[in-house]
Length: 363
Image (cartoon, rainbow, N blue to C red; front, side, top):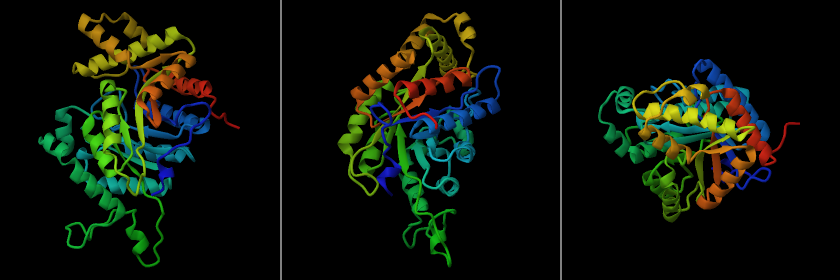
């Protein structure tokens, strides 16, 4: 697998490649269809402006997040783009059979050759009861503990290389390499590169030991970012995939035309997180609803802590914040997620950031 499938090029004056993480957020008064149309618009903008990759994340049972089926969304985005890399940030592997994921991403690779990333996480992407419903089991810790074994199994399905005598040796993920070994068969030279995702040290260490690229969820676990990246680099072993570590970090970043509007938008997104963390998940509220909401002292403390890790403001302010974060963490790539009530606000944010870094403009 060529490292070019992983490493991006640095556009404009950005310190590292810039990418997009899309949670397909649904605002109050909007539908999931509205959110998905916004995703198409943002993916097209990202492609035209030189963002490197576009990932969607698996979440469940959250009214304000319409990304429960990453493979379905990625297929839709593949039909509306031509060059940008598309991937999962990520698929929560314990929720699924490894063969199913290999088949889904083999299909995506056939649809968009050389453009698909397979990012994997070991968290459920939801609450415990929903995870139990997904897995048809309440043994959730067992799923997380089995993650390295599941990862190995998935990799063998993608490469079609179970050893003789293995129970799955005669089972093949299709589309996949087995088609090249069939009479008259021709198979794509690409297969989706695997990324490990994490918000703590477990996946950082595993990614390092396996020589895989690593994506860290700085946007909701900022206190662990530097320790996890250090651990990844310390444990990294060169592999057929990478000869040196490659780590991206997910970053909450929202640029608006004026600073006041940025504060209004991130307050609404923070109220949404307050509700989620207190067992009241819902649609992303409007800025007006957030401004009228009476936060308790504990909620206000949470909002202040949460928003301290959201880089927001004018385009110049966001650019400065991103530059400082990259320098502090040494991240090889910044994956930006813009959380706001309206799709137009999110779209404008990616446009403003592209302008701030002098990213290419469409011909």
